Structure formats: structure tokens, C-alpha cells
Image (cartoon, rainbow, N blue to C red; front, top):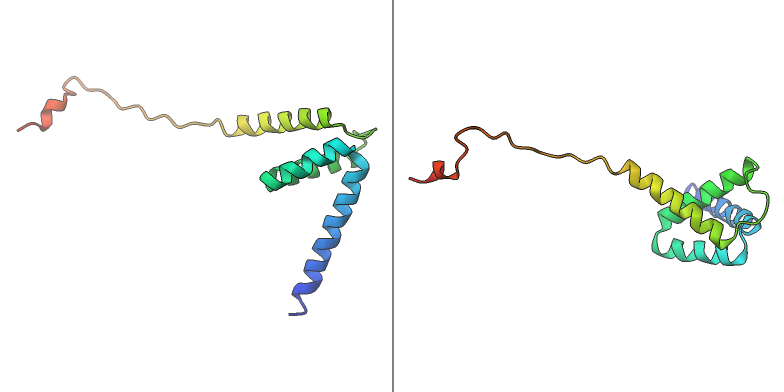
Length: 106
């Protein structure tokens, strides 16, 4: 029972630190939009949050991210994920000379 609590406490501390860093990076409207996204699609919000934090650490974020900039980032992530998932499998049947449905009639 004691082994679970420290992990939960560490996770809570990481989440709080992440929220504080995001509040420094995002302006009010962008932070509000990200929280609304988190209600509907938590995994997508986590992906965007991680990306924003990574950008901030690497110096790509020089000023607070506005809602419009966040929307552009969301669009870029959507395009990247849609390109990854466009791999389709198409099944094409070979047609033979005697490919009639009448073969099954008795």
C-alpha cells in the first residue's frame, strides 16, 4: 500500500509542474482552449502539451502562445497524424475468363 502512494504523489507533482509551465507559455485564451480539448480528447491535449513544453525547452517559444497559434499547431498535428494513418489496404480480385456468378446455379 505504501508503494503506490509515492508514485501517485510524484505523478501529481509532475502534472502540477506541467500545468505551471503551460500557464507561463500559453495566454489565457489558448490555455482555456487546451483545457476544453482535454475534456473531449485527453490524449490529444497531452500530445499538444508535451509538444509545447518541448518547444519551450528548445527555445522555439519566445513569447506567450496565442489561441490562433495554438489552433495552427493543432492543425499541423492533425495533418501529421492523418498522413500517418492514410495507409490503406486495397483488395482487388483477379478476374478470370469464366468469372460468372452462374457457376453456382444447379
